Picture 1 (tube, rainbow, N blue to C red):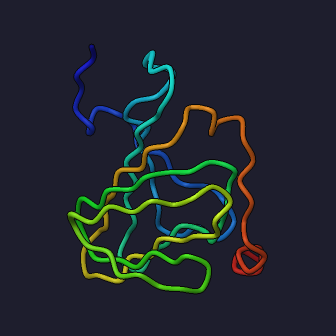
Picture 2: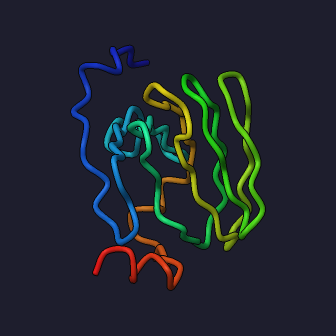
Picture 3: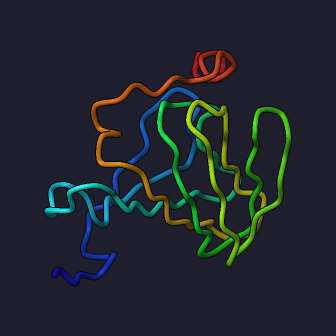
Length: 129
């Protein structure tokens, strides 16, 4: 068993076309000996967003703080603390902070994410140019 403070885990900027104001902490992963799943904590700054993207694995999200919107393709769904989100494999999605404070959420994924491709939606490429 391991117990650690989330603040003890270094935060990394999300570097991907179409991302703005996002950081991630890998709270639990294969590097900790977890054989199957990773738990990540994302923080999205006011006005920030993850890229519109898809990948060949599901993930589950639990909103800790802030107000946001999660997009499934073009369909927007408001999210707030206490909400849970299931994103299917290969589903185009994006998280945006629409509130007045940072938005934080936990995201659980299979450990294989480090070796699987992530595809930015075409409009993400245009945002970064």
